[in-house]
Length: 77
Image (cartoon, rainbow, N blue to C red; front, side, top):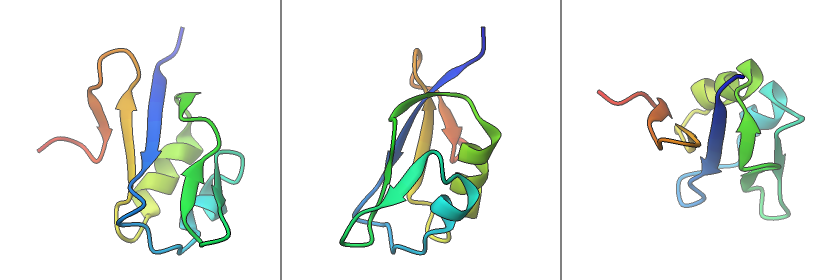
């Protein structure tokens, strides 16, 4: 069985660039205030979600392992 992720968007950081929607349209939407939000905060690990996080210009997308809370993105330094 694959990893499950918890995905969240820091709305105080999000600038509404829509890169997340571009890279993972099945996982993110912009609301009327042009703020991103994940469609399902708990999701199976998926390359498009990671690509969305990696391409967010302000690193507003945070991904952790659902069970342990270990950081997936941004990686812990």
